[in-house]
Length: 142
Image (cartoon, rainbow, N blue to C red; front, side, top):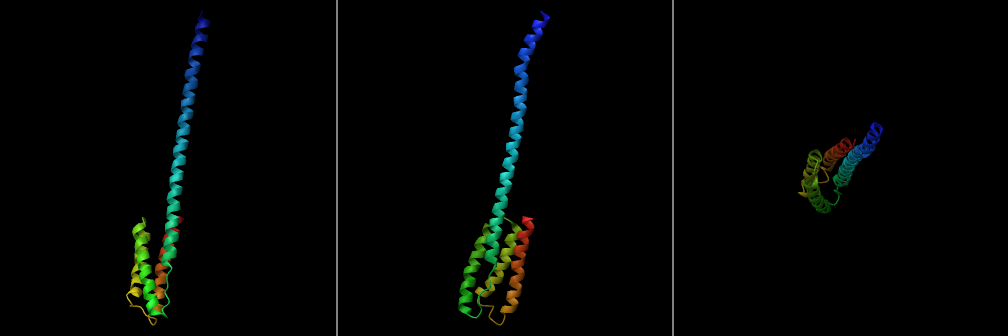
């Protein structure tokens, strides 16, 4: 009789043990999915940052043709608007500030304050501002 009770107890315990094992596997699978979800979110953030930086670098790379002052002003006015819109959309505060600095510099050209005689100094300063944008992007990417 005792042997029979042990067999019955073992038979009843087997599904419970299997259920506990399955529960552990489900928990591991859930943790794996959560980890994958975090990696996807990190990847999406990194991609968004890379896209923002690419756009910022392309937009900040601006040197007008000072030989044609009217065209330089028109081009600068368009670039000021583009920089302003990009800065407003940018989530990273350092990159946003870098873009605002580029925008202020380009605004000088748009306002007619920079002519061909002053262009060398302006281009040097603009290059430094452009370098700040690229440095911010490279630091955040690495």
